[in-house]
Length: 119
Length: 119
DNA sequence: ACATAACGCAACCTCCTGGTTGCATTTAAG
DNA sequence: CTTAAATGCAACCAGGAGGTTGCGTTATGT
Image (cartoon, rainbow over all chains, first blue to last red; front, side):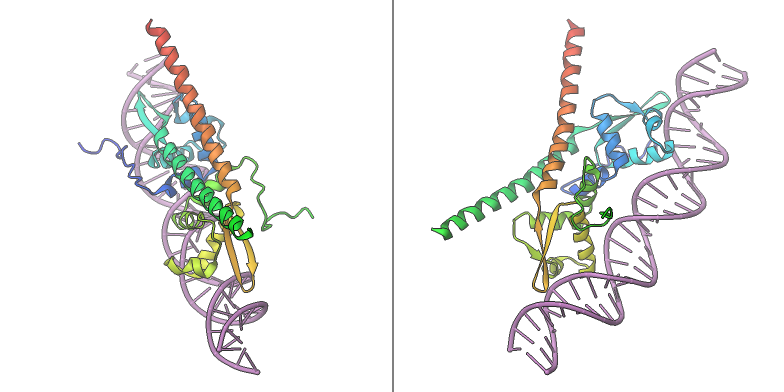
């Protein structure tokens, strides 16, 4: 019986950071992700209570977050609990740091160049 | 003039980080942003040369990046130069740091709680 | 002056996304 | 056992995103 679930480990995010950002690039999903960052896993129904949309819509958003590796799901009893997953967040942070550092270095080079010209 | 609707300098991103992430959530746009992080402004045509799409498509992507405040545009002669703009990047980094810190704190609390229970 | 490079605008197209509804299934509760 | 809760699945829909083409306009260069 290979069809238990759709594979939970389909996180093939090798350097494709746009997938992570795209997952966070929706206010509903960002709110969910933000909410889960307190570490407490929550069921779909719980997450749907405050959202002004259908449970199915929330489910779809959770699937997107899960596919991006930002969130983990595990079924307990009749409810499926979604929990914060920090790995991809770290990836995104590291990438943004890298870009910021590249920009800072460029600024430094430009600054020293201008100073050299002005002497 | 209350019409700041699609103003070019529409960086009214007050806490709405999803706009920034959405702008970065496309591989083409992320590539452009990444490329501009070396500080050198580039014209639309220059940016379109390597992209396997039309200049108009690149233009649209640049407008999205500009609307998110990730990039700045200023016309020089007949070409419009797009340049890296670090402010919103810093906002995004700060937000991800905040989420990561919230998660870290939650882990800490959980750890001390479990240790307290185990004694 | 004239050709051309760089760009803007607008119309158009396709496909994916965000969202809904209806119904079936599994699990907990009384 | 029967009922209600929590979820899954599939079909469906409107709108927006990504992309193209055509044409007009403004600078540049020779």
